[in-house]
Amino acid sequence: MVADFVYKFKKYLMEDGKSPKTIESYVGDIYGFAVYLQNMEVSFHGELKRFYITSFRNYLIENQYETATINKKINSLRAFNGFLMKNNLINEIVVDLRKDRMKVAFGSEKQVEVFSEKQVERMLFYIQNQDKVSCRDKMIILLLMYTGIRVSELCNIKIKNIDFLTGQLKVFGKGGKIREVPLKQEVVEAIKKYLVERAKDKFSDLKYLILGQRGVLKRDAINTLLEKYTKELELGIKIKPHTFRHLDFSCHIPLNSFL
Image (tube, rainbow, N blue to C red; front, side):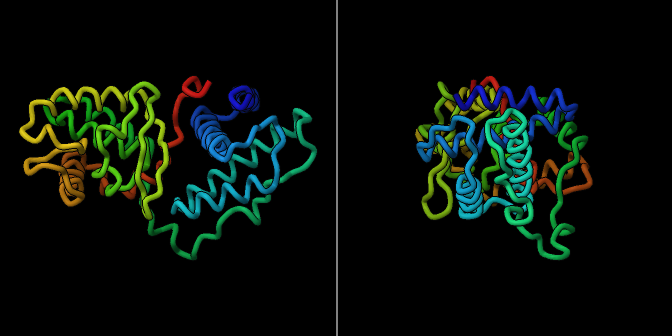
């Protein structure tokens, strides 16, 4: 049932003339909201309730999502609210941008570096070069880019945390909180390719996914390799785990993976 609403919402955005990137962002956000409702055992039939919004917002805050990310999701929910009203499924606006959007501290916008589309494109092309980027490093960059996980969460990924059948990654966050993160197919393929290489490593018996010369790769080593690619790519911006989180690619997944 929820999948049907997501599909119709995508069609609604396309007919409204929204750009492909905007459609991908909105649909991804509503997919994430739908997953949240499912986890809360809510059977959604088109009735968007006010407490769904406030509860979801509190969930995002508790899980330390960036302010910009939360506000983007609120904007997407407002668009979804409009779609439901246009289709006579609800008759009121339950998403209040003035109340639901988080206030950004003065000047803080300038403190956050974000990648441009061209920088992301250049990075994606660059990591395809097997002569310059190892299977492991390519996988690391794709995981950071498309899941939005923290570097500490990245280092703590165990092979058993990856469900290749469903394309889901189990992430253990701050305070021991567990969440399921969907993986794009190209990320899954990068992991599989790395696992073939990893099997030849002297530390291959370790339960953690990412290995280095001394065993499990630590966060300092992740930062070091990202600094290396910062110099090689010359993007004009530092490649850092935190910068990847502002891309919010964690929800940018194909619609058919949910249908």
